[in-house]
Length: 504
Image (cartoon, rainbow, N blue to C red):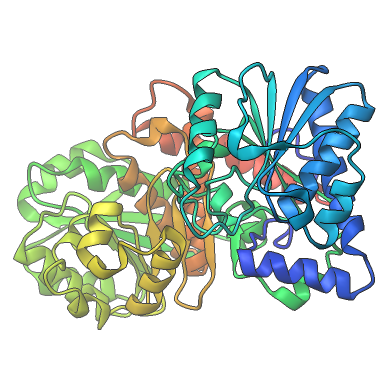
C-alpha cells in the first residue's frame, strides 16, 4: 500500500489460470496483434527489467523449445545490443522450433549451444526461458542438474513467466525449480506466483504490459484474484455521520470454560476494532469472573444451558456470532454450534468448532447458511475435507467452499479465501510473525466484526485476512496476538484516505 496513488481495481488484481492466459493471447492475436509483436514486447520488457537491476555482465540465456524459448532469443538479442556478453543454449535443434519462436531464433546472430550439455559455471546471470507456466511433468534430469549448479554457485536467475519447474496454476514444484531473483510475467500474474512452494521460488514478481488489451478480461471473466483493497474497499462498512452503535452491529463471541478464556477475549477485541458497534462474550457462568475482569468495552453474558445461549444469539438485536476459539473439542461445543447455526445468523466457525465435526462433517455442512464463514488452518481443513487435501490449494479450497456452502478461509502463509459461487482470492501480505499463538483468534474476530456490520461473507473474509496481514506488518518483529487489533486504526485511516483520493 505504501506509495500507492490510487486504488487498484478488481481487474487489476485478477489472476489468470494457464488456460485463461492462453485465451488472452489467442483473443489478442485474433484481434489483429501478431504473435511476433507479443513475443518481441515480452522479451523487451524482460530485457529492460534486467538492465534496470543489473549492470552488464556475462549472461547465459537458457531456452526451451516453445514460446518461452522464443522470448529467450529476444532477450538475448536485446541484451547483446545493449553491450552485454551473452551465451544462448537451446533444448533441441533450432530447426525444430516453430512459429514465432523459430522467427525469433532466426534473428539471433550468435551461436546456439546444446542445453543438455552446457555448463553454467562462469555465468554471472542466468535467464531461465526453458519452461512456461503450464509445465505438466517433472523437469528433465539435465535441467535439474543445471538448477542445482545455479543454486550452488549462487548465480542470480531471471525467470520468464515462472521459474522453470514451477506450475503456474498451482505453485507446485515439478521435481526441481530455479530459485529466481526476479520473475517477469505478462499481462496478469498467475496463481502459482502467490501459492507456495512456487511463490518461494519466484523472488520479485514483475508484471509487464506486452500489448494484450484490458478488454479481453470481459471475455475471460476470471474468478480468482490477488487479495487486496480493490476487491472489497468499496463495500467496507465505514460508520455514517448519523449512525450509532446499535446500527453498527452486535457480535457475540462464544467463550469457552476455564481455563481457555484468552482466545475468545482476543477475538472479541478484534471484532470491536473492525467496527462492530457492540461485542458480547457469552460464556459459561463459572467463567464469568475471568472474562469480566479481562474485558472493558466488550460486554459479557453468562449462560448455564445451550438454550440460554441460543436465545441470546437469536434475539433480533444480535447480528452474528463466532464460536470455536478456546471453546474445547467437546460435545457441548458441537451442540452449541448446531443450535447457533440453526438461528440463521451470520456465523464464523473456527478452531474447536471445526475440529469437533471432523468425524461427521456433513452434520456441519447441512446447517451452514449463505452467511457462514469457516476459518480452518491446514490441519482443521484436512479433518473436514480429507479427500480434498491432495488437490492443489486453489482448486481444493474452491471445492471445499462449494461442498460446505460456506466461505472458506484456508489459513497459511498463502491464505486462500473461497466462496461457494467459485470466487477465490489468494492473500500474499501475511508476514511470518503471524505464526504466533492467538493470531487466528483475532482474525476470526475481524471477520465477525465486519459481517455484523453487513459486509457480505466473501468480502468480509477477504478484508479481514488482508487487514490481519497489514496489522502484523505494521507492528513488525516481536508481534504477539494482542498487538494486532491496536494496529487497525492507522491502517483503516490509510485505507479511508486512499478511498477518498481515488480518482475512480
